[in-house]
Image (cartoon, rainbow, N blue to C red; front, side, top):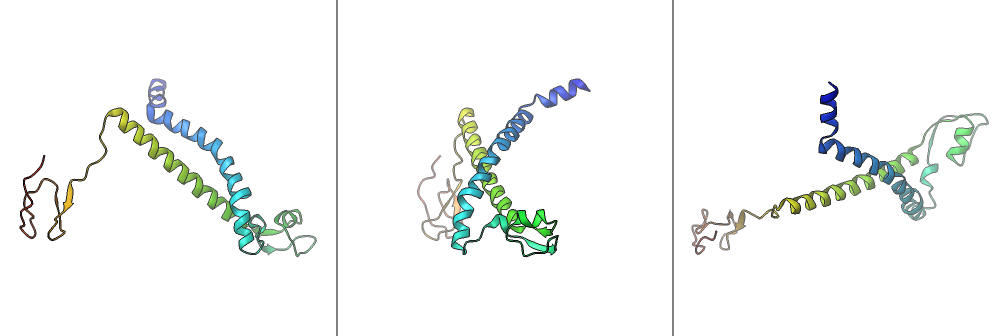
Length: 154
């Protein structure tokens, strides 16, 4: 069983995943700061001086009773609340991290294809110049309008 685990752990995919988790863990605080400190303040300003981290809904008042101007005040008073502003920040952070990971994976896959000598995907179809139907690239006659297209290439 130990041998099987070692084989599993040493596979390329598992190592790639581990590296991705470590990089993602290091990258997330940077994106969180970007969202909290750079992106959301201007959005809050445009929406009328809204601080997203202080948007919350009071479900049950605390001691002393409200109103509470910040989420920290409400939490210190023991308020039961839904902190939807922090949720919005977290969703924006997630979307940025997910997009960055997507771009990273796309770049890595492109580099791997180049290393393996795989040519970029070529289209296998083209539009017929007469009827604009989709036909195979190597066709010498359109199957739809029967127009001659010239000699087949390839």
